[in-house]
Image (cartoon, rainbow, N blue to C red):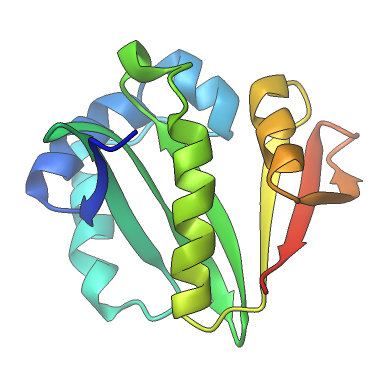
Length: 153
């Protein structure tokens, strides 16, 4: 998808993400909880001071469609996270683009391993991560959550 780009997570992305993270269907896929505008604003304002958290917006033809990043960065390991917030863009290959892009960005940051947490019943995401070389390492929370990891080379 040539029209996709990762961008600064700015005020425009913040506004869109407020709707996305408060959408019950998206919450059910990303283990999300509702957030208030104040909570989100406080989180956003702390971003520049965090050295263990990187976030990018995703735009398709300049339209905000999602967000992704690497959190809990410690040494050369980080935790991938991401979601496509605009449901009109689900099933269009953006997940694969996100994987390719985050692996490239992880290499640039000199990370050697990415891990992620995904709900077992999020079959589309689990299959995507397996396709991109993530291995299942363990299950948590009564086998509802899968931890997967990938070495970055």
